[in-house]
Length: 257
Length: 205
Image 1: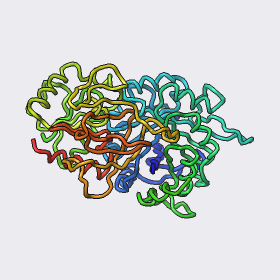
Image 2: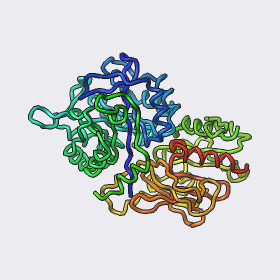
Image 3: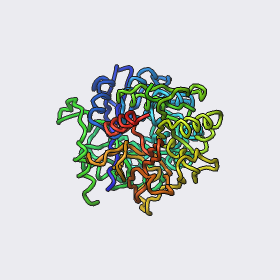
Image 4: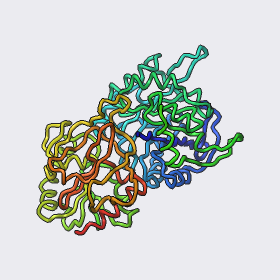
């Protein structure tokens, strides 16, 4: 039995002074202190952790290395960082601080060669390409950029194919319309992306239950990531950090597909 | 220093150092083979491609490591690519490995299961094949974080220390004399990794 990775995804916003959680990529709500959250997730023995700085590219700045080093020092599990990475040198610095994987997005649109450049030195497994997809009013999936970066192709599938061809070790597929909704993953999107990508696919967006995670992996995701599910509790979205017990995850994936 | 971590530019050395420290060991990072004198235990972490790893070791490291590991019998642990470098060669590259373990490195075999993508990236249960200093065989299930495309195949079964499964069963830890290697990342495997680091720190030197 394969137990898929379950990855909390934390969003950092400097302008809001800490961790936030968004709804469909908007309405960032403050949910706490990043270091504290990482400590709690470490104690809960999460499979892996993802930290994304959602302001860096928009504010035209690079990663906050000091904060990341502090976070990394609390992580006895793999850590993936994304946000504001513009050069292979940025990635090299992140690896030296104790980050295992870098997530690239905006930079890939203008410099797709950066994937190979980083992978050649650190290995493909260290390079995650993050692809945001939003359905338009016709329900058709379109590439999306929160930072307003123009995408090279209007077909989101090209972004997946290109990323893999350029050496990405993993694809992070974000269903923007599901972000923060807890309404369930976009299974159709996951199915299509998984068929295109030979490398592991991490699905994020909409996870609201353990069954949602199972549905996402049944649809072809190698791992699932979630934000709101791990930080909110109850109908009023009170902030409470949780993570399923290993036995629960074991039981979940021992059910037949 | 309890452990000297080899920094030839291929590893996540900082995380390895932190885990040794969390296991109450002192660990130094050394980026110059001339500074290996007096080392008690060695760690060789590595990520990335096989030839890149051997190329990074070429300027001065290989001779010095051969001296300490083969002649002085200093205990060493190779981690991830570091484990593969202990072997003779790899399908991934053309350069010879350190050849301390009689093993070749070949591609992962998922047994034809298309749902199992490569690289194998995730937590797998690791099963010791015999009593050994690194992994207890009587304390229940242990799981470790793996990230790899290749796996070691040992000539001698007695060099295999533990196995895991990803479509098929593969060797995930090797051991011969003072030489240890783990395909997984103990430095990123919570309490399981912490316990393994403690055990390595307790290996007599």
